[in-house]
Image (cartoon, rainbow, N blue to C red; front, side, top):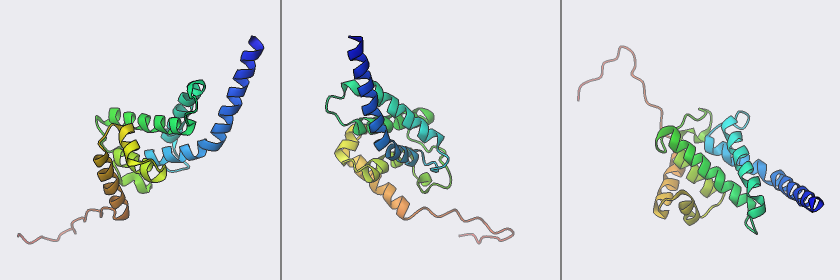
Length: 167
Protein backbone atom coordinates (compact mmCIF):
# COMPACT_ATOMS: atom_id res chain seq x y z
CA UNK A 1 0.00 0.00 0.00
CA UNK A 2 2.80 2.42 0.88
CA UNK A 3 4.63 1.60 -2.35
CA UNK A 4 1.53 2.36 -4.37
CA UNK A 5 1.05 5.69 -2.58
CA UNK A 6 4.71 6.57 -3.10
CA UNK A 7 4.40 5.73 -6.79
CA UNK A 8 1.28 7.91 -7.15
CA UNK A 9 2.97 10.78 -5.30
CA UNK A 10 6.03 10.54 -7.54
CA UNK A 11 3.85 10.48 -10.67
CA UNK A 12 1.87 13.49 -9.40
CA UNK A 13 5.11 15.37 -8.74
CA UNK A 14 6.45 14.58 -12.25
CA UNK A 15 3.19 15.67 -13.89
CA UNK A 16 3.15 18.91 -11.92
CA UNK A 17 6.83 19.60 -12.71
CA UNK A 18 6.08 19.13 -16.42
CA UNK A 19 3.13 21.52 -16.10
CA UNK A 20 5.27 24.13 -14.33
CA UNK A 21 8.03 23.80 -16.93
CA UNK A 22 5.54 24.58 -19.67
CA UNK A 23 3.29 27.13 -17.98
CA UNK A 24 5.30 29.06 -15.38
CA UNK A 25 6.90 31.46 -17.85
CA UNK A 26 3.60 32.54 -19.37
CA UNK A 27 1.91 32.78 -15.98
CA UNK A 28 4.78 34.88 -14.63
CA UNK A 29 4.51 37.20 -17.62
CA UNK A 30 0.76 37.56 -17.04
CA UNK A 31 1.38 38.28 -13.34
CA UNK A 32 4.04 40.84 -14.25
CA UNK A 33 1.57 42.56 -16.57
CA UNK A 34 -1.05 42.56 -13.83
CA UNK A 35 1.25 44.11 -11.25
CA UNK A 36 2.74 46.51 -13.84
CA UNK A 37 6.23 45.67 -12.62
CA UNK A 38 9.28 45.35 -14.81
CA UNK A 39 10.27 41.81 -15.85
CA UNK A 40 13.60 42.05 -14.05
CA UNK A 41 12.12 43.48 -10.82
CA UNK A 42 8.78 41.81 -10.15
CA UNK A 43 8.49 40.55 -6.55
CA UNK A 44 4.69 40.96 -6.40
CA UNK A 45 4.27 39.05 -9.66
CA UNK A 46 6.53 36.25 -8.41
CA UNK A 47 4.49 36.03 -5.21
CA UNK A 48 1.26 35.82 -7.22
CA UNK A 49 2.78 33.07 -9.37
CA UNK A 50 3.99 31.13 -6.33
CA UNK A 51 0.54 31.29 -4.71
CA UNK A 52 -1.19 30.26 -7.94
CA UNK A 53 1.14 27.31 -8.47
CA UNK A 54 0.84 26.21 -4.83
CA UNK A 55 -2.95 26.34 -5.10
CA UNK A 56 -2.87 24.38 -8.36
CA UNK A 57 -0.56 21.74 -6.84
CA UNK A 58 -2.82 21.40 -3.81
CA UNK A 59 -5.80 20.68 -6.07
CA UNK A 60 -3.83 18.65 -8.64
CA UNK A 61 -5.44 15.32 -7.74
CA UNK A 62 -8.94 16.80 -7.97
CA UNK A 63 -8.64 18.40 -11.42
CA UNK A 64 -10.31 15.43 -13.15
CA UNK A 65 -9.78 16.51 -16.74
CA UNK A 66 -9.88 20.23 -15.92
CA UNK A 67 -7.16 22.36 -17.51
CA UNK A 68 -4.50 23.08 -14.86
CA UNK A 69 -3.38 26.21 -16.72
CA UNK A 70 -6.91 27.58 -16.63
CA UNK A 71 -7.15 26.81 -12.91
CA UNK A 72 -3.83 28.53 -12.19
CA UNK A 73 -4.80 31.56 -14.32
CA UNK A 74 -8.14 31.87 -12.53
CA UNK A 75 -6.44 31.78 -9.15
CA UNK A 76 -3.84 34.31 -10.29
CA UNK A 77 -6.56 36.70 -11.50
CA UNK A 78 -8.80 36.36 -8.45
CA UNK A 79 -5.88 36.68 -6.05
CA UNK A 80 -4.71 39.83 -7.85
CA UNK A 81 -8.25 41.26 -7.81
CA UNK A 82 -8.70 40.46 -4.13
CA UNK A 83 -5.35 42.01 -3.28
CA UNK A 84 -6.16 45.16 -5.22
CA UNK A 85 -9.55 45.36 -3.52
CA UNK A 86 -8.21 44.92 0.02
CA UNK A 87 -5.24 47.18 -0.51
CA UNK A 88 -7.28 50.08 -1.80
CA UNK A 89 -10.85 49.44 -0.68
CA UNK A 90 -11.76 49.13 -4.34
CA UNK A 91 -10.05 48.72 -7.68
CA UNK A 92 -8.23 51.98 -7.04
CA UNK A 93 -4.83 52.82 -8.43
CA UNK A 94 -1.96 50.73 -7.12
CA UNK A 95 1.57 52.04 -7.24
CA UNK A 96 2.97 50.19 -10.24
CA UNK A 97 6.44 50.70 -11.63
CA UNK A 98 6.55 54.03 -13.46
CA UNK A 99 8.43 52.48 -16.40
CA UNK A 100 5.68 49.98 -17.19
CA UNK A 101 3.42 50.89 -20.10
CA UNK A 102 0.49 49.49 -18.08
CA UNK A 103 1.20 51.80 -15.14
CA UNK A 104 -1.37 54.30 -16.43
CA UNK A 105 -4.17 51.75 -16.00
CA UNK A 106 -6.11 50.93 -12.85
CA UNK A 107 -5.75 47.39 -11.46
CA UNK A 108 -9.19 46.49 -12.84
CA UNK A 109 -8.27 47.77 -16.30
CA UNK A 110 -5.00 45.82 -16.22
CA UNK A 111 -6.76 42.67 -15.07
CA UNK A 112 -9.40 42.79 -17.77
CA UNK A 113 -6.91 43.79 -20.47
CA UNK A 114 -4.53 40.95 -19.55
CA UNK A 115 -7.31 38.39 -19.42
CA UNK A 116 -8.87 39.51 -22.68
CA UNK A 117 -5.89 40.43 -24.86
CA UNK A 118 -2.89 38.54 -23.45
CA UNK A 119 -4.66 35.41 -22.26
CA UNK A 120 -7.44 35.38 -24.88
CA UNK A 121 -10.24 34.82 -22.35
CA UNK A 122 -13.69 35.51 -23.79
CA UNK A 123 -15.67 38.46 -22.43
CA UNK A 124 -18.28 36.15 -20.94
CA UNK A 125 -15.66 34.05 -19.15
CA UNK A 126 -13.83 37.12 -17.82
CA UNK A 127 -17.13 38.58 -16.63
CA UNK A 128 -18.06 35.35 -14.85
CA UNK A 129 -14.61 35.06 -13.26
CA UNK A 130 -14.72 38.65 -11.97
CA UNK A 131 -18.41 38.77 -11.13
CA UNK A 132 -19.06 41.66 -13.52
CA UNK A 133 -21.61 42.15 -16.28
CA UNK A 134 -20.29 41.32 -19.75
CA UNK A 135 -20.99 44.87 -20.89
CA UNK A 136 -18.80 46.23 -18.08
CA UNK A 137 -15.91 43.97 -19.11
CA UNK A 138 -16.33 45.15 -22.71
CA UNK A 139 -16.37 48.82 -21.69
CA UNK A 140 -13.38 48.55 -19.35
CA UNK A 141 -11.36 46.66 -21.98
CA UNK A 142 -12.16 49.28 -24.62
CA UNK A 143 -11.25 52.12 -22.26
CA UNK A 144 -7.98 50.45 -21.22
CA UNK A 145 -7.04 49.80 -24.84
CA UNK A 146 -7.78 53.41 -25.77
CA UNK A 147 -5.71 54.64 -22.82
CA UNK A 148 -2.74 52.54 -23.93
CA UNK A 149 -3.04 53.63 -27.55
CA UNK A 150 -3.52 57.29 -26.64
CA UNK A 151 -1.88 57.81 -23.22
CA UNK A 152 -2.97 60.81 -21.19
CA UNK A 153 -0.72 63.81 -21.66
CA UNK A 154 1.37 65.04 -18.79
CA UNK A 155 -0.09 68.09 -17.09
CA UNK A 156 1.45 71.30 -18.31
CA UNK A 157 3.30 73.24 -15.66
CA UNK A 158 2.96 76.99 -15.40
CA UNK A 159 5.90 79.00 -16.65
CA UNK A 160 7.47 80.87 -13.76
CA UNK A 161 6.70 84.59 -13.70
CA UNK A 162 4.15 84.40 -16.47
CA UNK A 163 0.72 85.76 -15.74
CA UNK A 164 -2.33 84.16 -17.19
CA UNK A 165 -4.93 86.56 -18.57
CA UNK A 166 -8.29 86.22 -16.87
CA UNK A 167 -11.06 84.70 -18.96
